[in-house]
Image 1 (cartoon, rainbow, N blue to C red):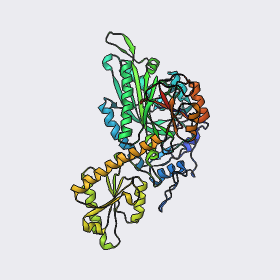
Image 2 (image 1 turned 30 degrees about the vertical axis):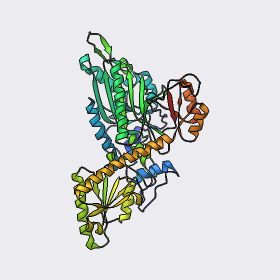
Image 3 (image 1 turned 90 degrees about the vertical axis):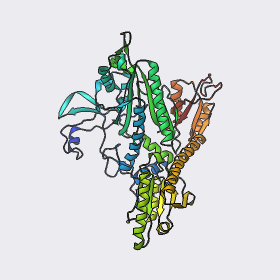
Length: 533
């Protein structure tokens, strides 16, 4: 899924070198990749966790270094032993689980069922749809040996599942009574890329991919639009990311689709991130695979299809949208820890009463459905803990010391408002006061993150009416929005000369007459151009 265009590979994994790898000590099968990788050198590491306070590269100084620092120090992920792969650590995976939890409910509410397809796909399946094989061939990983023997047909390690889904749909769909057929799977995907970035672009990543079959083109179009709307609402309401939904250009359309819809997000460095896609596949795959049904008149018809996906790339989007020089900043609705409690004591005689009060506050919040953690370790100072949990992006921090115990109150600090302005003293420990206060502040933080991201996005989109204005906007690192009816060749010219691509034709279009910024011809739509990940 997604209109990715990845470069070819150059290295090849041999069977003998793989057999020597300690990663597969009990594996009797040999996987030989025609488009393969190399084991990363031991020196390739994400920046080490700094044990003392500080250590994160400022965003304004080096955005990429800042991003890698945050991933490392917030314990989100690390590089895997094979170059281009990553190990998602528990704190990072918890964000993905929160995404899954929300989307699973929405998928089932809209009539979809979860299932699973094999990750090995016959290469002949990929070849059946011409534009599909052309679009994906540079990034395929191929298995040619299994059980020590050459395979009769090479297998593709799943880059996406339209082909194998259609193979099975052909067996399951016979009549209009079998339609619509709407399924989703949560799976891993392999797309080979030499230039990788944790969460944003890796050789293997996690995603959900939905696949549906319908009796009419209208039903398929309605489904494709419905799912991009689900993604849009998720981005705004859960991730606090103000994406721009729209239609991809022909050049950027998914290989094998009639139309691709997308949600485009502006990252903190003002690059665009394609955060989710929904494809109207028309009858392209059903014709290639002979996926037909008997309509109400007994006539054989090819089904109309869609596919749609969001991946762990969204985790990277959350980091790059909300993070600051102190580290990660998580929207409360996706945070695995919404509140951290840090007890403070100096004398041994104070420890027990402070810890008892902290544990009581934890129990109150937990009973109210708030995700809370008590950091009662005594190996680190309170100041170190403050910085550590700020760096991990926890929305709220509660501080409890001996004076707070005596007064029956706590100190509460907001992650999104640094320093004293974000700190409030004297909030009662009583559950009738504390619980509604915490819930209100979590809602405020959620809204504040979205509002801040909207202001940032809108202040960095420039309306342009000529190609020179577009080039100027892109050179300043901004997004350019202007009327467009240019050809595919014109679009490629923009990419070659500016590095920007058409991110989408937004659904929200301005009214009134327009002229194409490139050709001067009448234009019905504006397009958004930007450099992207």
